Image 1 (spheres, rainbow, N blue to C red):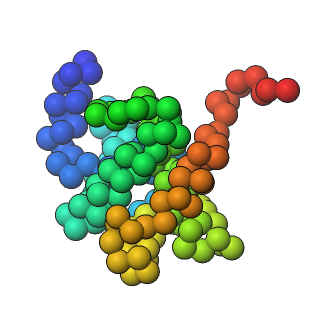
Image 2: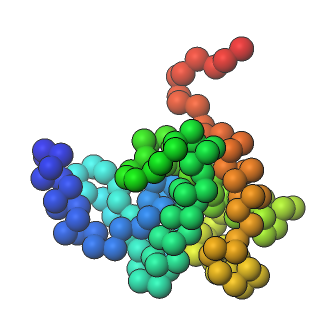
Length: 152
């Protein structure tokens, strides 16, 4: 299947794409509002809740905006490179979970529940503890590739 054809079919099959799809596909976090599907030997993640999708979209927008300096990106106007996007998504979700409960840090079993808990405490997405979240995001380590030489 050609890439353009795949993307077209993907958009028709997944009309509510989960904005944390890359993070969820790493299997290092999950969300009860999402459901996985397979298309042409690839996995996609859809969001089952328009309200959750709106919350997550707003949160990810804030993460991207506030992570510009950490990612050495003066302006983020489109999609980030794959590894930087995963770092923003995973580091941001893990940072939020750590800010809520530092003792019981990640993995994050439910992105939506974590975000709802944060909103219960901080009331608005703009008021979340982004300095703590960014600290975790900056120091967040992606897993090394299998078979890749280890530094040292």
